[in-house]
Picture 1: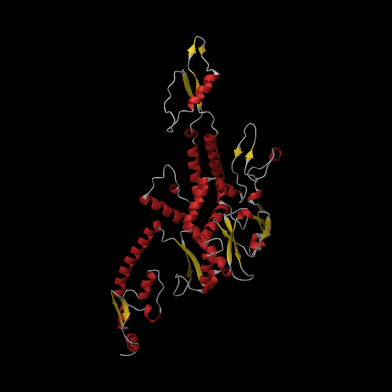
Picture 2: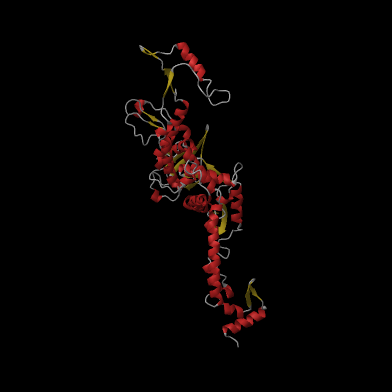
Length: 469
């Protein structure tokens, strides 16, 4: 049995005797410190899903990548489409589809659709999964829920059973309980009510819950957090910048500065600076010299460390590094910027949205109603070039199909199928051009029109089929 503890309980005080013989890779505390020779300090250690929240909260590049991806994800338009029939791939007006649209538009009193989707996506990216809780009457389908909630995984205590997952039929067979811990209140969530939206990442410890992507990038996250702390210390607690000492000599060597002179020098030093009321140049009759102290930040290679570790995080989340603000990329623009944004959608957002909408299909049991959900990004500016190419390809294909149709090489249905459209069928779809003309169809710039009466159509059909002369 594995337990995911609330993040509010994850920070514990561990004394030195408790650390003796401890396995650092599996302990739940995020801070590790040994005193003495060979000591080291971990700013972040992955110890389960809840520790991922620490990484998200304290690692700026990781936070930025996940937030930017969430913003891209909610740019998509959500459609509920028909799976089959003449209206296949068209927006459904089915009552079930209308009810789902209404529910998603206002999933609960506090969130809009985009806020709800962004929250679900962020939870999934941080923890590897998000818990979806519909509020509905007992026994009713999920699409009849009155509210939808995303439950933060960091608030949950989840107990899994030891049952062989190969013998399980549902989540209830593999879970003992899920308890939400919020403030001073604890409540058990009925297992039959929840649905788990999962990330791609597999797990080798649980048959239900995927691993967080943060587990594989534990060290880069730790390095970034440590590097930012080092920079903070250098800025706020770096100590003296240098030494002002006497440069005057006599027969006995350097003449020390007297205490009164030290105070006078210190007071004079405060007069200098870059403000309008301060002096910029030092004029003195004292024989003094300046000795630089400390190490320049650039010599510590802190920025290079952050850059390299951020690249590792980008790789884990399929986020193009060039889209992050940095010294090397802040001039990115024009077609280059569009290409990298397009890479973000094609390499990360669209595959992830397909996975999530597929899970929404299962949640609402859409296949039962001949429906499916799709998130469309074709309207996003960086994806418009693809739409233009598709339109040009369709135009070229239609010009070629028209030549073949007018020369009786293909039927109208074969033309439509070549375009990916549903065939017309019936008495017209399988006919060649000459047959349609004989049936009274006229073709021109305005399209195809049928000009014969029903009686004339019947007569022409009989003549075409050879039943009458």
